[in-house]
Length: 278
Image (cartoon, rainbow, N blue to C red; front, side, top):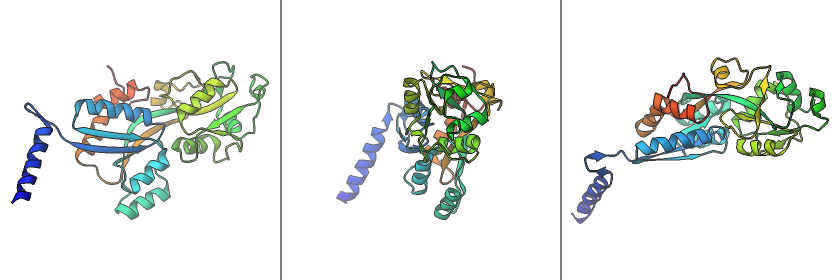
């Protein structure tokens, strides 16, 4: 009887804790991990959502798309953020664990920008020139009409969805330069390009810092060009779940896809799924 009374008391205490006047808050946690490209965006979405849902705690971390997918398969997180689709091996593993390849949600669009230093006179590239730069067939800026200086290539690590996307769409499966500088995050790539006038790297359009977002084939990585698919490196950003989301996870994803969530995406510098006006 004493044990039963204790349990009842704890239940009452929980109800009191999550109630304020006539308001009752849903309590729960959501764990999100994955794409470093999406990390600032996901943090902004989580912060805004928690303001209006005080009983919900959202934990967001990066580590790369590949790392996020592994954590999703292992049941460690609720949502994996990804800047690419699942590959065949990942889909197979997910199906073996859960009997399904999971669910995916397109949450935003992103233009993958090529970053150059503000002092670099070369600000437009053809796709073939980029392929030659990042595979070290072009090693000096003078080959592109720039200064007689060596090109410093900076890339993301192999566990990054951005690393894989760029290789597939620009290098056409050629190998990256063997001496390319590898930076774990887009922020670090931007910092390196900002500090070195001979550096070139890549990352999401949402990172608006002290670098130039170069044009490709004469087309700038702007929101309009990306939404209309005129810019060649336009991609969708995804949420993956291991199964059909329910409860708090579903409500959060629904909110991200709503006009309110899409406004946060636009404000963060990324591209909403449709035109948003404030």
